[in-house]
Length: 477
Image 1 (tube, rainbow, N blue to C red):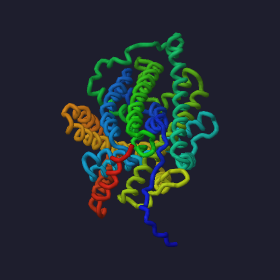
Image 2 (tube, one colour):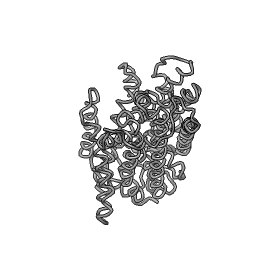
Image 3 (cartoon, one colour):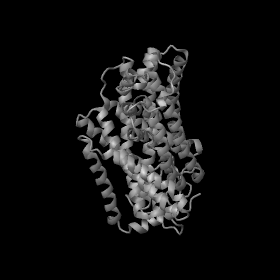
Image 4 (cartoon, one colour):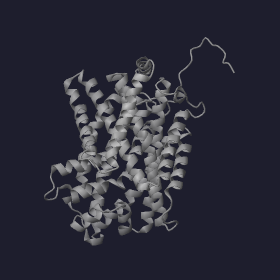
């Protein structure tokens, strides 16, 4: 049916500006998935640093703070659903901006399936711990998580962010219960094995040098991945240019305090002697092992359930970021225009969300048909997403250094340090060359980035379309 002509200009699809600070910050904290991170990342640090594993997260927090500085400064000037697409595009130009957004999209196409696999892995652990099912198939659990995430994400951005916040509050509180129990028994002198409080966890063991510390810090750095996610709410936060920088700072500070405290308590809980360090560094589920040792099996089961909730929150936050990125590209004509639509009922870019969810379903189904184990699916996709994310971190900090350096050379220093740190972490994720199939994953990411570069040349009128969309980013509140 033909549409009637009107003298009024066609309005651009618009997201709803309705998020307050707590709701905005919940996305950055949720995508970081602190409970899920603490369920897996401390082990790698303990394997390298032994009893000094907490130091890895101290150094990582400092590094992440420098990387986040560029995001904070740019988010204070530009608000856009495309996040780094606008941060970099408004400073270095449309093509670098699109490439940064493309790298971000590459990450958040795979991070939600990673989170869904987290649900499946810890869901299986919960079922096994409670005796409900042993060796359950991961695919039905993943499908259930996928459906829950889509339903919650489709309800609207405020219900989405509140769900993320609720999931993380519950899961973090469960870890705090365990930490409190361990601290109580350490103080009372009733800890298993006679472990006690000691400051040795913040002193490198003999023979462990600074090179080992920096290597361990790279794994700690990745526990903060997602701190930038609030940037995608630039058109949905009430006061984005103040709320989003504060949200990013809050996520990094919370991660720093929680991670250092949690790994410290885990290290003390296992013990700082050789047997304790070996137990921590070889544990497949350190929080669960400590819960059984200090409290009992019921808390271990609840912690598995907490990790499930944390993973759900991370997946929900991840699809929010991906949908907003695709929405921004579609609205500016850099992708299928239909992706730029917004639901009149919920204010959600529903076609972009559907595209994100269907891509996730294809990935999960392909791995299931290939017979890939749940842990391998988790780490394959996490590696791909992390590499793309680190490229985006570098581009964004280059943009911040260029933008701020034109005002004062002094302001260039911190984002330049962010470039070096993100580059260092990226380097240590590709060198030494990891074993197969991980050695091939950087080439997949490179192919994705080259495809993005090709699109900037292939899309008719690319520069004009991108410049028009980015111009509107400078006109926001």
